[in-house]
Length: 423
Image (tube, rainbow, N blue to C red; front, side, top):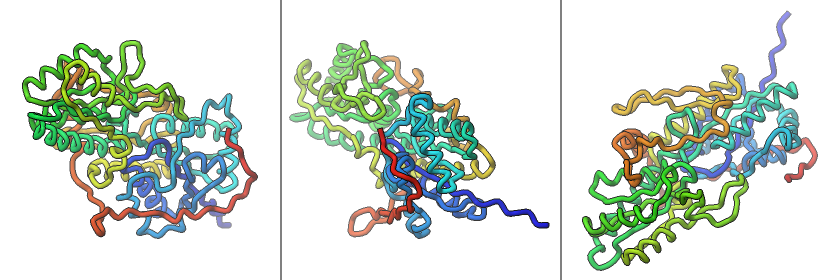
């Protein structure tokens, strides 16, 4: 008597938090790999606007997208299915939300949960895995890493970071050339503000331009801001070179912990709402030293710049999405695929795996030996770390002078449950 064939389970994929130039490459890796294993995985449903799509049963049927449309995700920035800043809190206080997720997964026969995001997403993914076990519902939860902040532990680097680092390095270089040409009679100090709440990885990328003779001062979140020392450093560089560039992380803070850019508001994750460190620093220079200045905030430009994405970053983002599916098919649960560096030169790495219990709620900061003793620059060790991550170009196709990016149809899946109100 023949054994009954086990029914294939569907997969759920969602994007979380701030999007990047390469998060869609991870989505492409997940969906293409799942399609290649259609004997084991049914449909891939995506959450519209991240985890909110799961809570409200607003699912997208990715099988309605052509192979060429899914492939085009690899060269398209932002989040193709929509993302959100919505943090599921503790299981004890917000069990209702987690149970709703399981209800939706049950209703749509979902057995695989792929959550693409940063540290908060890793925490959510881990909690969902725990609850599925408690409720006796088989679900394999795999976290797909993503964060431009590069602050996830265990993995050598995070998808999204390499492309932001490349954008910041290139922009710092080009703007500095501009300032240098005008410094004799005009701007002498250019200040650029970059993202990075607690970790200065992005700001560090600005230091790569020193190899081309650009005088740079970097303000890291890891180094307490000292106004007197900062102004002395800027004054010295302007006197020596005629100009200088300041790269300030949005997370740069005073000794009492207050951010230079703190606005007093909080985002959906409970983090201080930042933005405005550049004008604070620029006006500080103007008042103390009298130099003419210009400032800029890279803001969304740095994380949306797919046109100048790092080839290394695009490849790693895709591979981690691919590996997430492979790990699930091998029976793994509550894990995250990682980048494990083997060597700097030549750059070599392999894809590893880390338990979410060791990833959730852990931030990776810049090592002190990556920052110069004076606290305003990067060391050779840091350069060796950063250099491979910005290597290579992976230009999208162009038409009429603009990149060609894909917009998916995002066809909704019919709902089976009642409405759910978000609190």
